[in-house]
Length: 189
Image (cartoon, rainbow, N blue to C red; front, side, top):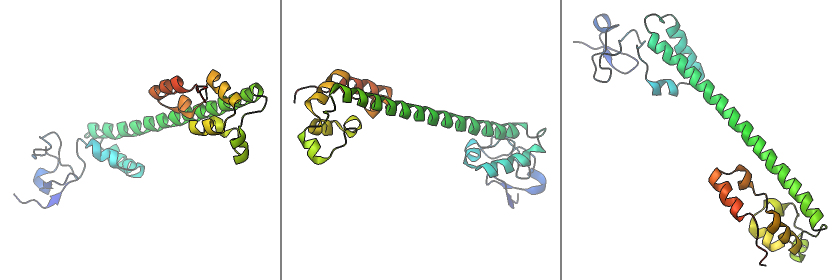
């Protein structure tokens, strides 16, 4: 048998005798034919590797053969649906992330105003004043910064009300639980 044409899967096909017949190769197990580069069943990884333009070109090829190749046509449309669902899910995740970031920003600002009222504006110790530290950075920065530059009044406020850390809003559920457990600073200075 003389093989002189390769199909899309890389199999050698004898043009007149084997085209449109089930593939005899072990990988296909007789489930798909060797039409003129239009397999009966498409490889899922192959479909996922195609960019949008190539997938549309693949769909155009199969539109004329929906009666002969319904499985492959269905696979292509299912891949379009999968990509559409994934895109919508990504957009929903981005929206939720934006909402949570805004909630975090709002909570930090609310806590800042409450702490400013509770401490009568005395939120920095001498080292913080000398270093020119911004009081707002004590609400979002690392805990070591708070311990180094916060006034006694602010440390008392944090021990009573906790600090609105980024992890407490944007972390995983485990990280949020752990953050809640240690968000209150002890007043042991």
